[in-house]
Amino acid sequence: MTFLGRMSTPGTPLPGMSWSRLLVAPRPLVVIFLAFASFFLLLFYFRSIPPSPTPEPVVLSVAVPDPSTRYEPILIYNRIPKTASTTLMHLPYELCKTLGYNVLLLNITRPQHLLTLQDRVFFANNITQWQSKRPALYHGHFGYIDFDQMGLSGPSPIYINMIRRPLDRLVSYYYFLRYGDDFRVNKIRSRMGDKMTFDECVERKLGDCDPKKMWVQVPWFCGHFKKCWEPGNRWALEQAKFNLAHKYFLVGVTEELETFIQLLEMTLPRFFKGATQMFQNSDAAQHIRKTKHKDIPSEQTVNRMKETKVWKLENEFYEFAYSHFMALKSEFKQTKGIGMFHYEKIRP
Image 1 (spheres, rainbow, N blue to C red):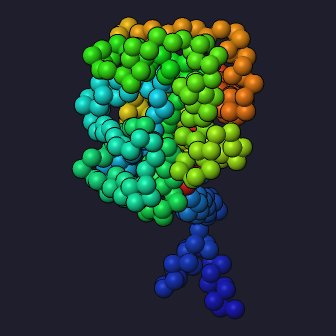
Image 2: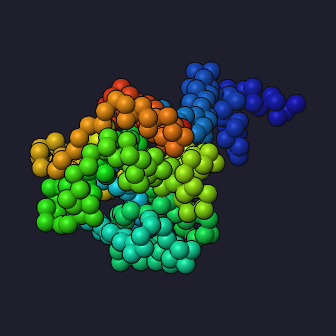
């Protein structure tokens, strides 16, 4: 009781505890003290809350490759004769030094455009391990080679090609053997001096215009399997379609050469940057190899060739490739080459 009595007596000193002064302090001081205490407690609380994430900007750029792990691609163009392949290949030969890649021609000494199994294995191993010649564009007249089938390590080469209407290609080749072209003007071709027209050849049912001579583009895409090269083989056609759809990056058509070059430049700038302008600005670049003389076949000849099984399958393959290429052309015109996606929600 004495202790309580002393606390209630104003002006009586109480030694020791400072809290005793607080208990007897005037009410305004207590309010001020509690306000300051509340402020510091709130400040500590809000500082302990992690800041909310700021909205992420739209990412429009692409990843920057690490130079130490950069992939040096291999491009293969197993070109088909008389499809404007020489005109197309003129561009990489002009661009390769500026863009920093190698162009190599695979010249097959055998009469057919096929490699033996031994040569295919050697070729596949050689070009994938020849680091000093990477990046590289290999081209030549040879059938499709399936690199995945050989179990090679690392990414497979990128395949491109271009095809032509089958009868137009055969007629062009027929007159090329007789008249040559403006690319190698002094070279003597195998039928030089023979003035027989294609119509006359078909009428006489001779070998140079045999419908089987149209069986080129299907086996070229089908590959090295024996049945691929049997004229009119339905299985070969289906295999050629499969390879075109699943093994080739891009297949153009001769009748749409400029669009094909534009698509190559847009999708493979490592090899074709600047190719479109080069092609458009040079008349010479648009007609590198043109047959000196060619007669248009008669309607009767055309109808006769179209009745054959070989033409029907070859034309079906051409239409298969043409329809897809025209879809790509339409897509390219709509987008004008502008990317239609971007990245978001990138973590961490």
